[in-house]
Every structure is written in structure tokens, then in C-alpha cells.
Image 1 (cartoon, helix red, strand yellow):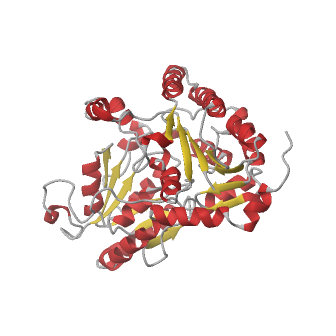
Image 2: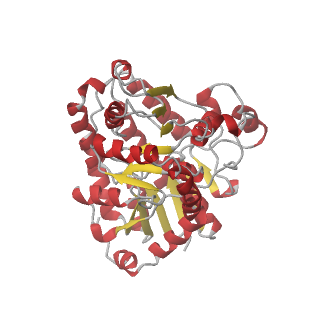
Amino acid sequence: MKFLVSQKGSREHFLTARALHRLGMLSHMVVDWYAPRGILGSIMKHVPVPALDRAFAVQAEGIPDELISPLNLVGLKDRVRCNFWRRFGRSSQATLMGDIAFAKAVSRAKVPPHDSFFGYSYASLEAMREEKKQGKFIVLDQIDPGEREHEIIQEEALRWHQYVSHPDAVIPRRVYDRLHEEWRLADLIIVNSEWSRLCNIQKGAPAEKIFVLPLAYEPKTNVDDLASGESSQNHSPKKDKKVRILWVGRVTLQKGIQYLVEAARLLKAEPVEFLIAGESNITESSIRHAPSNMRWLGKVSHAQKELLYRSATAFVLPTLSDGFAITQLEALAHGLPIIATSHCGRVLEEGKTGFVIPAHDPVALANAIMRFVSDSSLHDKMSSDCKTECCKYSIDAYGSKLVSIINNPRAQAEYKQPFSS
């Protein structure tokens, strides 16, 4: 099998294309933006303008340039369009237009021979139609919990309105109508967690086509080395008797920040410190009224994040809905136990590498944190198992699981079904 991979954005650092290439199964990849190599690319990577240096760092490690077709003009138009319409609160409509433009461009692209197609939800429909006409085997990566997740976010905004800095954008119905058509055309649908599978089945995704494939994570740096010259003595969870609970990622209602705040209130008298690292999407007022045992660090650099992982006792993710949450694997790689809900990719082993708690439950969250207060050696007991567990999520392991899913008789049975336009 040789796959054409169609990918809008650099999601998971082109994980699927890299895994397929390692297996000799990648025919070609079409992307909406890819940074040029050579002198220009090297220079632009180090330009001190965040948007530019990020854009010129978008490359797929290990994939030869000749296997990649960048539709950079399509990508540039999409970014300009999104930036313009965001000012008028219409970013969702702009994203929809960009998804359609990209999928149409892929359907017209001249690519090498292939017998299979791998695309991502929301931005693949027009390309999938063309591939289906040609009798290709089609895999769709359903990247998130879909419409149900958006409903959960809206419900939470009503419940915790004091946290809402700006109303969540209304997603056009056409977005989900297109998604349903992508589900229909796909021979196989990949989701990255059982939670995503359940949410999308609730909204009509065909259960017989869906397979769960967790994401992969391979640390770029040796986690046993510090990201800076500061000594590990200054960043050890053993430095004092405080339990440090780390949050990494966007600070939103979706991620459950409101329940962490309530748990922090319950633990004000305990030797617990909460470190919140990530760009805030909640009101300044809600931050000001949070308990004093919470430190709001804002967006942090990669080096700062490394030090935070090393200094923490446990990682927390009280999310209400996440497809997977790659930060969990980052935490495991640093030997950090996890406290998370079941509303995301399950990576922890209960009692061995962390604790699963119910969503919407600050008391359960506080009780899980208290286990690290009651047993000061719990972090050290779990740390080694955390690092071992992370090794199961390599790119090669991802590729092997993907191939076994593709070869599953249930997936192949869907491929044999006749296509009706």
C-alpha cells in the first residue's frame, strides 16, 4: 500500500506521514504550508518574530523534500483570511473557507501514483470525493471529539460565565455537514482516544468504521538533562515539603481550569502550590479571585517548560473534553505522575503512573492531589514507571498499530462497499 497524505497544518509534526515513510508506505504528502530548506529557511528560523520563526520551522523530520508538495500560496491566503475575519468574530467561517480551498487544491494536485489516501477531518472532503472516484482506499483521521465537544464547551460557558473572556465562536452547521459526508466516504476512521470515539458516535459517526489509535511522542531533548545551565538542585520536587501541581497548556474552561481553582480553594491550608503555565483564555477577574496558592505563569518558553516539568510533583489535566492531550506524554517522559479525567486519551495506569478522576469534580481532584501530600515518596515511586510508560508511544509503535488497523478485516470490508455519489 502506498499512501497519499493530505494535511492542512503541521498537526503532531506530520506524525502519520513520518510513520508511513519509515514503513515505506508513503507515496507523497500534500500540505498547505511547508518551510523552504536551504539558506533562506535557515535564516528565517532564527528571525526574532514569533509568527515568522514558527512558520519557517514547519518541516517534516526524516521525509525527503521530493515526497512533499507544499501548497504555500493556498496556506498564505488562508492565514490572511483568518486574520482578517477574526477581527469581526467570524474566524470559524474563515476556517471553513480555508478547509474547502485546501481540499479542492489537493483534489487538483498532480501527485505520484498511489492506491490509498489519508486525510484529516474537516479539510479533506473534496479530495476524498476525487480519490473515491478513482477507487482508492480512504482513511480519515477524526482529529477531535467533534460537535459534542463544542456543545460541552458551550454548556460550561453558561455554567461558569464569570470565566468567559469572550463568547465562543458559533461554528457553522456546514462544518459538521461536511464532516458527516467525510465519514460516509471513508473506508476507515481513526480517532486518537476512546473519548473521541464515543463523542463522535453520539453525533452519527459509523461505529463499525472507527478504530482508536493513540498519538505518539518522542522527546527531542534528553529529559535527564536540564534545559538550561541551572542546577537540578534548584528545581527538584524534593527541595522542600511543598507538593507542586503543574498545569501546562491553554488555560480554558474546556481544559477544566475552573475545577482546578475550586480544588485549590479546598487545599489552601495544605502545603500545595499550583503552577499554571499557558496562555490564558479566561477573564483577568477570575484569575485575581483565584486562591493565593495558584501561580499564574502565562505562556512559557520550551526551556522554562522543561524546568517546570522537573520541579513539579504531579501533572494535572481536569479536562472536560480533549482528543488526546499530548502534554500527558510530555509529563510521563519527565517522570511526572498524572491526575486526569477520562475525557481524553487514556495514557496513565491507575495507581501506578497516576490517578483518573471524574470530570466536573473538584473534590475528587483535591483528594487525588492529597495522596501526594500524604505520601511524600509517591512521586519517586511512580517516576520510573512513568518514563517506561512513555516509551510505548513511539512513532514506530504508532506506525505498527496503524498498519494492523488498516489490515483489519473490518476495515477492508468497508473498502469493498460500492461508492454512490
